[in-house]
Length: 552
Image 1 (cartoon, rainbow, N blue to C red):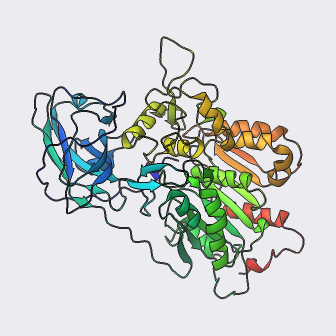
Image 2 (cartoon, rainbow, N blue to C red):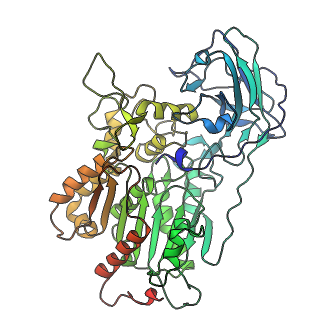
Image 3 (tube, rainbow, N blue to C red):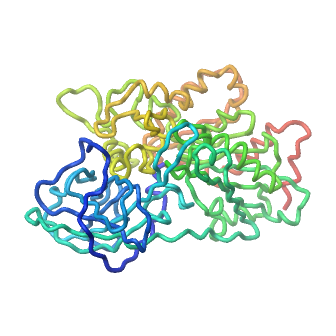
């Protein structure tokens, strides 16, 4: 979860700004309720230089305001960060000023009028969108991942300008002109080594659906002495989670995982991290979706076969393990549920909500509002979305969701709540996800919520237990802290209540809660490797190779 906290900050550097011509760019037809029209104070004009981008741009134009420039203002934005303001534009030409004197959004301040008078650093940014003529008949504009992991702040091809020191005062009417005149450069993937290999393929399934080239990838960590044992095939751990080009386990950093991986008594596995960013997020959630498209099919029919053809994987269900935490925890559990015959065990830590009666702490089926607690007509009590292990609230549902709305409307922020909507919701008439709740007010649409049930893992498992139980009961394992930072333990509690009463099969995977542990608690590398090895030893069929890959 919370990719904005997991990914490193993008690059910003600076040079001089250019002059602009004042001309209001095209915007969405009607401002949403949170958009403001300024009657007093300065307007902000943002343009981009032709040298940086010669063609017209459809996308999001931003500026961020900070009291300091120790870190570039754009990099300081977040749900609890410095003020960010945005405006959606269509086919704006180089040199054309996008004027922020009306029809824009802001967070955490809704209006420039809310900025106290004073001197600030202000920085422009342009998030470039791509046109996708999808196979379902919809044409949408989204940010195309450039193998950075759908992070607009560091995505190659996006534009930015130098932070500029200005005075903001409600009595001033002179426009503040900013220019995005620099381009974020392409990312150079890490080089392969003797034990770490990377592959990247164009998915024909997804390219056809999106109407634009879509790529999948994987980073493979080979076991010690892989090349000197050419006849050995190995069990595999498919590690799920956020986009990363790092070696699985952080191998190569010289830490404890390196010692474990190279130790003489370590069982020899192949570890694989998968890369499948979508136009909505750094991770597709690895399932078929009306908005994301057939990522489940692409991963199962294209990416995994490409890995298992190139590397010596034991291509049997009992030898395929799943693991992951948070987003990866949900995927690890979901793939075991949706593809029960393909994998032999799933070890999911701190998974995103496995029961939508607790979508974090929102019951999407019964609650009236996602932002406020039900039950008091006279007092609005904000729902929290993040806490510390002692219960101290760090963020609210409203703050996180409304920040995403500033970053991108129509579920285009690349944020956590928007990817859940893009994954679980049906596509609307305009081709974008139908909101499960109003992003402005938090009012829940229960008709949409009912359509999320096909991804509600507890509902799927409970409804199909007679057929699923014998296939996954002994394979599925869940781990979570009982003070998970994002309240994810509550859904696991419901899953555990069902698990305890499910009955047949008699052998069941474990569900473990750790007292006072935050996000993301779960088995660490030595314990996890031991659990996967024992899973293979216990459930591999008679005659299976459980010995050759244990060499020293």
